[in-house]
Length: 356
Image 1 (spheres, rainbow, N blue to C red):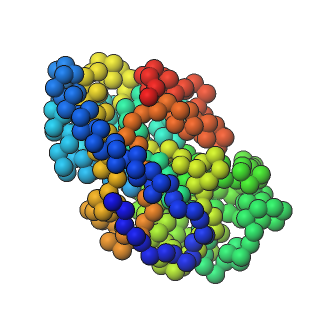
Image 2: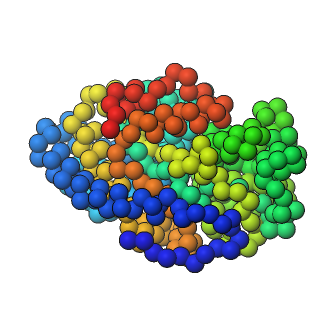
Image 3: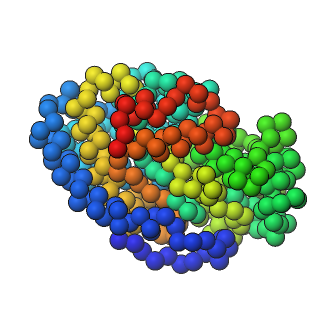
């Protein structure tokens, strides 16, 4: 069920976002995945590892997983989950590599970054997590900035100034979904970011999402950086202070509906525990379908300490209910365009050689 939210006049005018357009598909999936879970738990063979350690990097993408846990969706598939929260993708990657957790939820661009992630070449995607929807990633500037009235495109536009280095920008880090969206938006504006000239700053310093977002917002407001890229719910939270304005919706062009996060297991774990992974995937599909209810997602956000007013106006992306290799191909392509190393990866291997 969708819920009408007050319009935000300080944001670019856009078409209705994809979350609304895709609700019908999720409604059908809700009825379907219940049957899948029952089939898996009753006829899929005994579970090799019914007790799973799952690591989760908190954020809007994890909302449906948290809903599934609270509603005991995984218990109904015979799984007992021990869930550990991690503040960063790097911490979750390290735990997965060391065998401290069996499954990790995090960002594709972080986990699949061959140049930095210790697990990039050894993981299998066991569930899609969250896709950006329209209005969910934005480029912001101070409300008093002259950029507020500047053109985005063309000579002298914001994109050109960013590419030349005359406009600085903060992102959480240079492998974050925010950077991925920014880089591909710049390409679509025909002003690709220059590795030698750009002033794109990594603001994360291994801090958690809320801390990093606060750091970037404060930098924009103080004028120490001209712009920043924020993802929901931090984007809404920043705009509603009245201190920043959104210059551009970055969920556009090649990055439209960009897959942001997923669930990862070491390939060896997936191969040794096929029934367990199948049960997890089926239960996860049911949990993901809970994203059909905006009210439920808002409740999950407030439980994660997002202010109720922000949760009620936050733009929400999409929660896929199955794994589609083409989506991972898209992610790898976007990562390549952003100069992240993915050359040894392909979607077939990442999905265990299957497509849906």
